Image 1 (cartoon, rainbow, N blue to C red):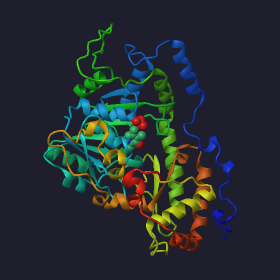
Image 2 (tube, rainbow, N blue to C red; image 1 turned 90 degrees about the vertical axis):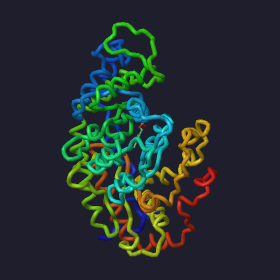
Image 3 (cartoon, rainbow, N blue to C red; image 1 turned 60 degrees about the vertical axis):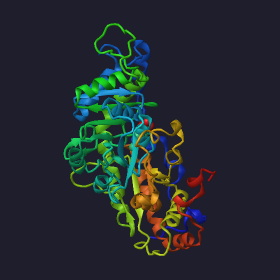
Image 4 (cartoon, rainbow, N blue to C red; image 1 turned 30 degrees about the horizontal axis):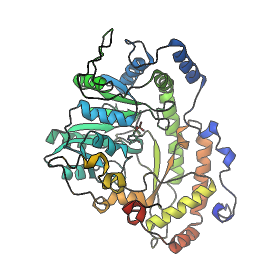
Length: 452
Ligand SMILES: *Cc1c(COP(=O)(O)O)cnc(C)c1O
């Protein structure tokens, strides 16, 4: 089959803009159920998290605990707050260390810093993109107190290995499950695989609300009770008829609103159906893309299911017949070519977390937590995590489009666009070869914060 010139060189676009309509690829999907639920809250006059058991927030908590199979769930203002409160409720002390994968969303590292816990970065596995248990074991010090198991892109981490490591050193095992709603590991849902878990209900996630929200799950009743106090100024509200305004612990305000909860409950009703449709659609897409030489599609080990929150594709220049080209230059040209064909691929994390200026400079919070006695460790360097660095250089992601359960025809178009680009790898290679490319971790904007 010949499909003509590349769209970036003036040829026809594979996926016309009007094909990617809101009905096909919009997210979240909003139905009359959400509209009615939100209006019901407005008419009820019950807007807060504390409505003696009958409010939308408590209903969501009960339903989510049942869904994942956890004993307890606390609804919170967002996923970052859920991570932070998980650390606070578990009593992880300021100045202690937590192992965090070098490739993640920055919240995985910022939540510990906000609790004055030092993130220690660990390299990832090149296939699953989740924290490498052997590298994690090597990063344990006498100050390590916790592991942040980020189920990145929606794939559960190697939890058996992480549980063994946590058990050996007495570490708290936190799941950052912000991207992994409904994903399973050995038959158990994420949210039940460690000591405590944090989910995000942000509008872009697989279980979205109409804005911001978070859920914390645990089987530990003591931890759950502390989490409830931590979301409202350290007050004890459980079962009390009247608020007494006594703060037993130093804590802020991290509650979820009833409107957000009502919207999320409607999404939860459809989560299994959406998850099943997405799994079918994504596997069909990956089946086609996996046939292209040098295209490394995301994998799902047999003992897990994948929430497919983000699809990450790695490119093997050698197998694509352009082995002399810099991986980053090749990725940059592929991004341009695919976007011109109508596929909105993009980088997700243009650099490992170690390169984030906010973390590297240690300027926030007056230099804390690193200024705490004994907490000053050398800054992690990007070269220390070669897999994370290689992955950001040689991969692109597809986000959001495939979340919609009706995305199959558009994903067919995406597959056709990739196939067309692969017919022109000689041109792609030539363009990448001619490019003046500097790897992202050597770029000035990462090193000194100057504009891109
Ligand atoms: C989205 C996300 C978070 C933070 O959740 P928010 O609700 O946006 O605060 C944390 N970790 C990961 C991996 C995420 O993707």
